[in-house]
Structure formats: structure tokens, C-alpha cells
Image (cartoon, one colour):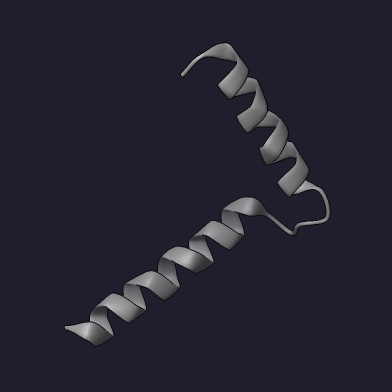
Length: 42
């Protein structure tokens, strides 16, 4: 990963953090939904 990509990534994360309860919380919700869907498919 070069420096420009890293800086763009950090800028995107900071932008996502604005007005969001928590990016980690949103990611955890996505993971939980994915795992439930995966269990249901088996």
C-alpha cells in the first residue's frame, strides 16, 4: 500500500466517522447479519 492510498483510506474513514454512531458498530452488525445468513443457508 503506497502512501497516497493510505492517506486516501484514512480520509475516507474520517469522513465515514462523521455523523455515524460508530464504524466498528456498523461493521459488527454486518458481520452478525452475515453469520446469521450463513447459518441459515446450511
